[in-house]
Length: 240
Image 1 (spheres, one colour):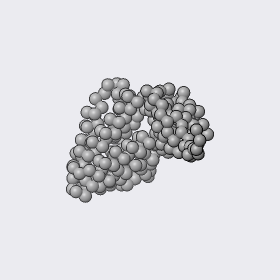
Image 2 (image 1 turned 90 degrees about the horizontal axis):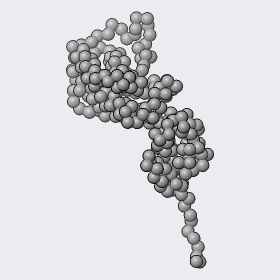
Image 3 (image 1 turned 180 degrees about the vertical axis):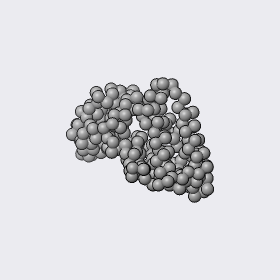
Image 4 (image 1 turned 90 degrees about the vertical axis):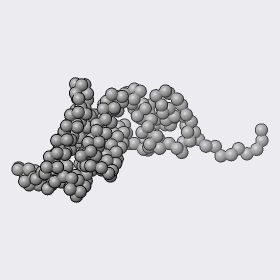
């Protein structure tokens, strides 16, 4: 054959599914998001311990040097997976704060949703659940940031309720911290795992906790001071 060939577009073959289906994609489409999805698929198939950067790159159909363009190490990639989970949960929580309806019901649905996500991950996505639990121990800075984001959303919800006359609270920030601490049992991955393994009626427990808090706020809660008796700032004692 004669003639001038057009410019070639380099393609790579990428495995993204648990069914081991391979697809060809343009090299220009390789991205941090694709690397993240591929890493999650590898973790779900082989576990975090047996997943490495070389294998992830191979599943993407690229040299592992290209993967390091997006994530400087396996540790950074694992952190990014958990950060994605936490950001998604914070975005979900925000929808309840922005929704209409009684504050007590929105607070309940917010934490039921967060709990169910942790429950579903423990039952049906154990490798990602286990990764999340490990990061909780090794990256307290990430967890503290997540706790601040959720607490800020709860604070906003309480402020709405106070403004509308639903609740009477003289220190909204402290009340939000109380809610955060009370709800940690139901959304912390390690504690959720213990409750589920023990066949505890978790949602009933969560509902009772929120009901107790909401009724207290409805009756009126006054905090004597903005700091603990020993002078510590309550906002420093964060969990999740």
